[in-house]
Amino acid sequence: MNNTKVFKMAFASVYPHYIAKAKKKGRSKEEVDEIIFWLTGYNEQDLQQILNNKTDFENFFAKAPQINPNVTKITGVICGYRVEEIEDPLVQKIRYLDKLIDELAKGKSMDKILRK
Image 1 (cartoon, helix red, strand yellow):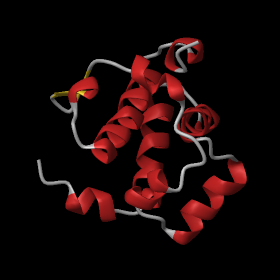
Image 2 (cartoon, rainbow, N blue to C red; image 1 turned 90 degrees about the vertical axis):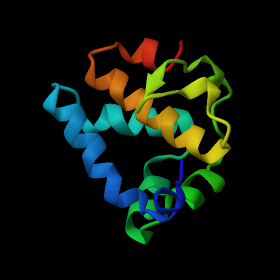
Image 3 (tube, rainbow, N blue to C red; image 1 turned 30 degrees about the vertical axis):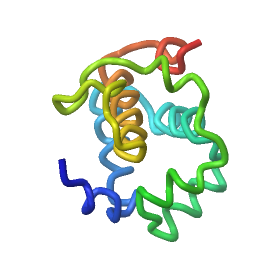
């Protein structure tokens, strides 16, 4: 799978889609942000800077303060791929985020989404 375009895509261009997907299912922007903070270690100020700077996905994950050690508990299929079997570390992190947002939109509790 050729992901060069995805790596260079600005996180800010996808972020509104995450929020729209969540809101369409009665969830909130705050829950989307909580998932992002849990996964990456970023905080609200960091996220705003990332959005303002139009940081691409490659740098979004490369500069993340700390990828949550519980990411290994994220399993299942997203976009036709099992997230736990994706070999490219960057693609896997992007798909982890997609999977978590999917779970939010499907009505899972935040405790389950954040693997508590």
